[in-house]
Amino acid sequence: MWVRFNELFMLDESTSMMPASSSRRSARRSLAAKLLSHCSQPLALGLLCLSALAAIPGTSAAQDASAASAELIAKGRYLATAADCAACHTAPHGGTPFAGGYGIESPLGTIFSTNITPSKQDGIGNYSEADFARAVREGVAKDGSHLYPAMPYTAYAKISDEDMHALYAYFMNEVRPVDHVPQKTELPFPFSIRTSMAAWNLLFLDNSRFKPDASKSAEWNRGAYLAEALEHCSTCHTPRNVFMAESGSEALSGGSIGSWYAPNITSDKTSGIGGWSDAELTQYLKTGHVAGKAQAAGPMAEAVENSLQHLNDDDIKAMVTYLRDVKPIASGETTPRYAIDNPSVAEATLRGLPGQGLDENGFHVFSGSCATCHQNDGGGNKHYPSLFHNTATGADRPDNLVATILFGVSRTVDNVPTFMPAFGPAASYTDKLSDKDIADVSNYVLSQFGNAAVKVTPADVARIREGGEKPFLAEVAPFIVPAGIVAALIVLLVIALLISRRRPKAAHA
Image 1 (cartoon, rainbow, N blue to C red):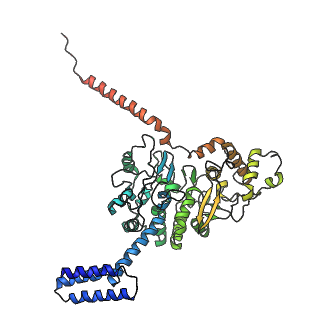
Image 2 (cartoon, rainbow, N blue to C red):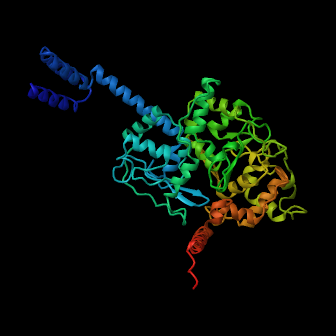
Image 3 (cartoon, one colour):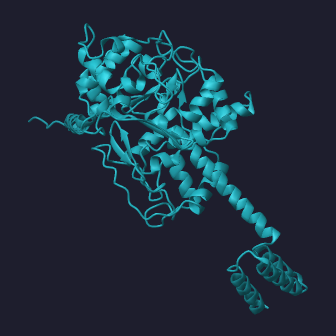
């Protein structure tokens, strides 16, 4: 009997090589008929027959299993897109998807993403689902090494078991395995000691799943799950404490992310997005651009390009519903950053002439490098945004304006690229501007079109060029080891003194 079943399975393998034609269907029917003829045997053999029938390609049981698997993988693909995995785990300029090598600029140094393809040699091909879940939620790799929280596992900890299962199915079954070892992350001591992250996790990692709020609608809860877990909005938009953990009491009120600043996205009407309409928020999340208001650049442009534009309309609507209801937090602004309306005729009037009271260098840089695209009155056009009614020029800090000039803008939505050239490190020789040039043109733009109270110095540009404000940990890093040695010596000295005092004194004659 076992020989007959083996013969039948060999027949199935041969028919699977045929094209999906009538001859192949006929072979499958014949195979099924033969199996059914053997299924008149006792019950034990009948159970075996049922299992064999389920395994035949083209039978209903196999089709149902295949459909379920395909559905699970498709769900995982969508979740991986929502989680923006490709953005960080794909090297720029044509890197292989998920093979790692993207350099994430952090205040402590550059952190290079790992290979998360199912390569058994260099990726996660040997990870069980439990290994995978632990890495995603707890930041601990299969070999026990700790990941840095540039990988937003503090947010991914909220991902449900069901969604984690789908993500694992997607990465293991659809992502192409690539044998590639990305550049190794080498942070300065003591941050190079990855085991120190165990203590950080003990203090700051909440490894609990997302819990729906029963007092809110299903749409609100879906939006909260997307924003807090998969899209990990708080990773960028929440300020950090001295240990670089998120300050939960100030959630989504704005935070520095290297050279860029992720603005306040609470429901505050002045400092946050409370003055935006639902349609504007929806458009921004889907396209990264709202005329007369804002445009996505830097990390937000990557989020729009790789993740947000691909979400379905219901999920975008759910995120808008949630963000509209986030507790408002005021950041101190007196005017919404998009509300400043200052068109200027200075460039058109003074083109080719001395600045006549304006910052002459800034005026000439604007006239030569900016006016053609943004128009001489700053009003922009179909392809380039206005410089007034613009969150980058109307903010109370110049980081995003300066970073945009330094690093440019690049995002592709619906296969349509939006591009602004960089004038900083990546600029061509003819377009490269010095720190003073960028400070001068920033001040011209701010005085003519934006928040004139904000001033930019060459030192500000140098700071942003080099990755932004250094956090407390980075500032004290050079002193951690010497301070530790001094502290250890003091402790040893105190112990020695205590021991010497406890020794009995010698008796006198």
